[in-house]
Image (cartoon, rainbow, N blue to C red; front, side, top):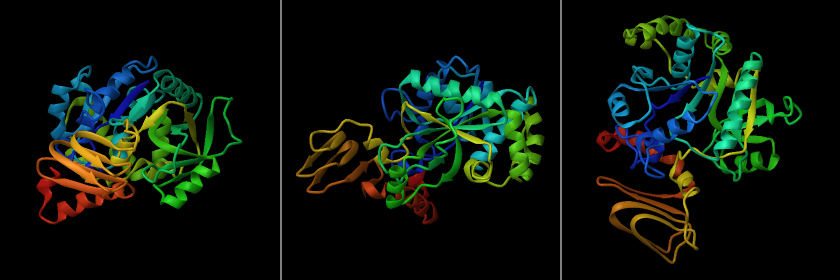
Length: 353
């Protein structure tokens, strides 16, 4: 199986610690290694995986080559500009299809935390066999342990289990819900968190793209030979419209199956997500760096240099960097992305770089 790691994001919801030029996937958020390095080392242990490719931005290419161990620089592919996930994944599928359309392709985010290697490998092996078995698009979902508003959800048909392997036909994909809707999803028992991992025969995937996003396939088929030859394809890329793989394909296709992963997973996509994986004190407070919490509960301080104190407030995140301070309620951490967009459009773009 050939796998693709998507490593071109900016990690906007993790601002101000994550910036466009220093995004989340290249930060040491948990442990001594970057999230991308941890992802590569995790995938290298999977026996079914034969090749690891990375798709990233031009401005991150040199840094990835320099800082990340265990990669072939010829397998670090640069997308000329960010066009969301469908073009990035499709570009690699078209590239692989030139060699063998029956190859199995796996797609992985660069910046997720996964604990429990044996269960992770078991889920990947199951996905591999299901993708190889027929014209199936396969994803992995995680059983929710709380009504998170920071994750997308996958609803599955409980009566459609495939070969007793915890794989089910997907009924619907749901965008990040509001709190009450998330509570209903969790209570129903037939929703999983969308972990953003996908598996398919490259030929099956290209056929599905042709059905649902034909204009994209036309461009990708012209781009793939240029990747093979090492030629620039910037001019062709400019004609591609941005599109997410979820909205553009998966929400429309009918041949999708989800595997219920039993490993521990967190996308560390927000400050609240980070809070849920760190060890807190008896009052639920977490301090990373220099700080103090008094008469308060369930707070997170992230401040390596500046002394930061929280007194008498609950459920607050405070993040200090050299040039910015973020104070936000944990229920509103998804709004950080909106703040980043505000800064970009109001002459404060340097604070996002």
